[in-house]
Length: 138
Image 1 (tube, rainbow, N blue to C red):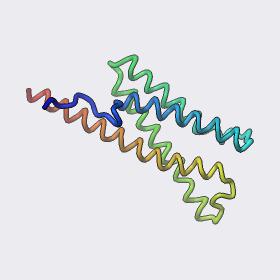
Image 2 (spheres, rainbow, N blue to C red; image 1 turned 90 degrees about the vertical axis):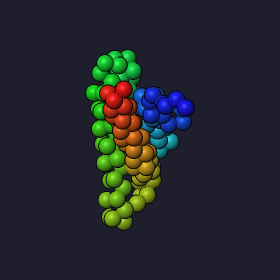
Image 3 (cartoon, rainbow, N blue to C red; image 1 turned 180 degrees about the vertical axis):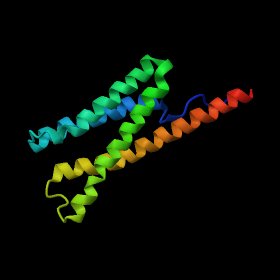
């Protein structure tokens, strides 16, 4: 049985998955802002972060010689997404969870999807390192 060259999730490599995730974040920010009627800069935070994820994921595909750098930036952005989502803990501790329904839903979404995304990035980096070690052996 031939070994897989790249780590994949649902048949997508980490760069492709990152682009999908970036578009999800972008659309979430726009749709939530429209649904809630918010004109606040903060309601678009998922869109801004999603744009960063899309940009650096695309750059990692376009400039494969810099893939490692760009994907580390994407993974670091994922960590920032998790940290932003953790703000839901402060809101909960203050007894104000869902006082601003859409803002809190965005925080929860960022926390859950961010943790999954960072996990997939970590697994991808780990798999790449394992493959590199195996190539050295051979």
